[in-house]
Length: 339
Image (cartoon, rainbow, N blue to C red; front, side):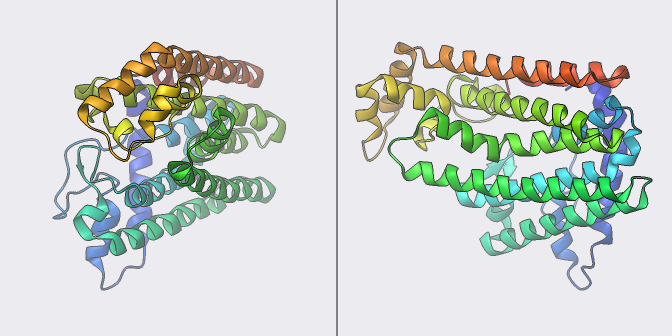
């Protein structure tokens, strides 16, 4: 994401999100407000200002760009942009609990500091806050029919997120997973919210359902390509860039796209994955087996295909103005990233 996009949208987005959290009725529970502000990157665990970035805000920026590219005023989309970022952070808090993850963005996760029960509650509060933010659309000039359509997309996306997460957790215990089933899973867990951002943004900008469907397709394919890039970096990424060991995904038996492809190609790799535990030497052997069947090359091919389909869907949408180039730049930055 370019710094120019961040400078254009993030101050107003941040102010909108802060207002939503400030307006939450938490009388007698100000310590709870710290738990909500912490994952958003505003404070540390002691409620002191936090000086480092904890998220790129890709999804809300995509929504605001889509609003502008569809011919609308991006500032009218701020309630929806705040809503999707709050929803995203709700999902991350719960995901960290379910994955038993100690760190996110280089610092302890919410559950690691305050315990699992408090973290579940904080995630639930951000979920509710997302709807409080979305309610702000009622104060814009959008017609009621368009607002109801946006609510329907938002609700459907919530179910898709949880469906995808369910499949992801189920796949951890499932010995055989097809590539098709994996794409279905990431279409819910990773791509659904990206798709919703582009679709909602286009609806706010145009109130045109047909136009918004092209933006939705763009976001869906971009979201799938985004996740495949994560899968590649999870095995072959540079630890100093990604912030985690390249062995992490293998040690956790994560069924990412390269691994699924490798398991389908190599019986030896399948035998490795049936071992009760992995040593460092086993991790090295897994990577060697994946390299032998060209799993990284396969994943890059799939990532490229979905990226190209996303670009085609965006061309079909015929985005307008400077925001159209912003969408292309954002997509290319996500496609080429190494973190």
